[in-house]
Image (cartoon, rainbow, N blue to C red; front, side):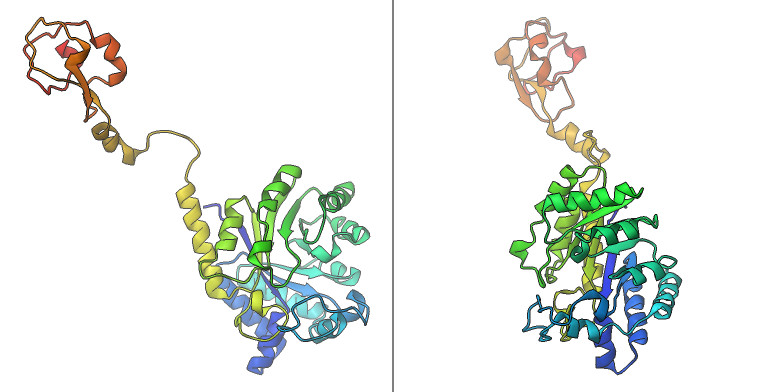
Length: 345
C-alpha cells in the first residue's frame, strides 16, 4: 500500500488538554503521541517558538475570536511557549520510542538550530514562506524540507523553492494549505494540489488541512486522490476543548478513518494497466457473443448473412469474423440455435 505520509500536527493543543486534565504539558504531549501512534500516523509534529521572537506585542488576532477569544497573537503564543530545547529532546526521544517520526516547526533561528539533531525533517509554516533568509538558513542544514504554501501566490512558492535549491537542498515537499482557521470546505480549493504538481514537477506535493473534520473524512480522501504524497492535519484528543486549534483538528478516530479511506482508495484504484482480470474470465466468456444459426441447416449449405445472429455465450465464433463465415458451407447437419465453431464450417 502506498498511502500518503500522514503527519499529526500536535501544535500546542496538548497545553489545553493538560489544563483540562490537570496534568503537566509534557504528560499531555506524551498522551497525544501515544494516541497518534495507536491511530497509525507516521509523524508527530509540534511547534517550537517563543512569543517574543515570533510576533510583536500588538499583532492582532487572525483567527475566529468566537472559538479562541485571545485578542493578540503575542498573548496567545505566550500561553504555549514554555517548552525549551530539553523538552523537545524528551518529546523527540519519546516519539521515536513509539515508532513515529518526529518534527517540530521552528519559528526562529534558535529553534531551527537546536532542533537539527532531533527532527527527521524540517517543516516550515506558511507564515514563513516569504522569510527567505530563514528558509535558506534551515535548508542549508541538508534535511528534508516540507513547506506549507498557504496565503501565497505561485510566484512566492517559486521563490521559496528556488531559495532551498540555491543552497543545495533538493529534497522538497510543498503542501497546499489555506491559511484560514477553520477553512470553510468551499475554500479548500483542493484542485490547487494538481496546479502545484503541474507547476513544480521537481518537488513532491501534499496538503496541510484546516477544514473541520466531516463524518467521512472526505477532505483528506479527495486530497489523496488528487495526488497528495504528504498529508498534515491538526490533532487533538478532544475537539470540544476551547483553544486555538481544537475546533478544526481531527481526533484519533478521525485519523483512523482517514487511514482507512486511504487504504480503500488504494484498493479500488488498482493498476493502470488495462487487461482482462482473472475475475473477468468467466463473465467475459459467458457474456460475450458468438455467431448462432437462425435456422436448421443441412451439410453443404452455404451460410448467408440472414442465417446468423450474434448471441451469448461467447464460446463459439466471434461476430467479428462474420464476413469470413458468410459464404462458407456447413460441414454437417446443424439445428437452429447452434453456436457455430470453426470445425462446423
